[in-house]
Image (cartoon, rainbow, N blue to C red; front, top):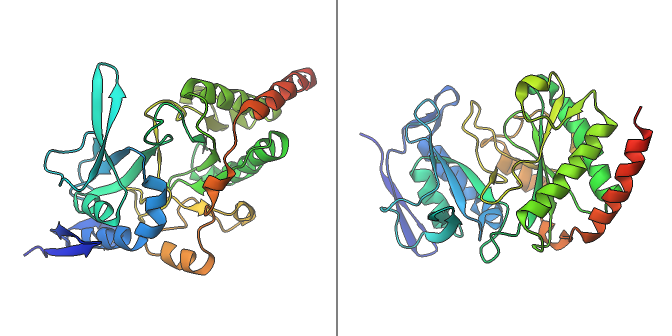
Length: 313
């Protein structure tokens, strides 16, 4: 018989079921293990989820089963799960907001392995407080290229444009570089800035980098993707699990780790991340204190672009 139980968190009882169900069958990780991971990691994960509408990557039968990408909150979700009405063309979508440990555990019990969040917050959903660059190499064998170009991107963002930049593994084959922003500009303006910055970086390494959206035109170049910077688009949340063999976790990094030859895109998993945090803490702690507006960086970027064009062969 499938094991059933419950968790009581901050006065809220969450009923659990089918905890013995294999969720990562090749790794011996059950649904109960996923629930326990999200319960134990709640203090680290919730700061990155609070006030942000959530898109759920649900796998009710584990990663070998059917995937459900769910935006609308289900009618059976309990009233204590926070909600947000997100405007869309022709209406609204009512989405979950994960602002307490009980919600995180409840979602895991619903088979939600992946947690993807908005780049904007409630009260200003049309103005992002983060900009994201997705460094997408052609395959995992080129992960080292993602590390090298992430460092180049950091130099542009921090050294030349005066912004702050943070990097994380995605649990896939690449990296995300996040830039904390003051929520002053709309998504079109932020995406335009990201496009210009990506274009400048590509112009400096055209044989190794591309902003080409069509995969067949990229060759073996690393794709510098800025398309997540749009209204209602999402990015995998820090410390969220990915629905892949090994149960990798999207993991914030220290910049110096990118020079570590032992770094791999799936190095951090549900079984190893707690020890990492206990030893070194969260590299992104305090990120919100380093937000910048884009007015000054936009002027500096505009000045850099003609120089890059003049230097082009």
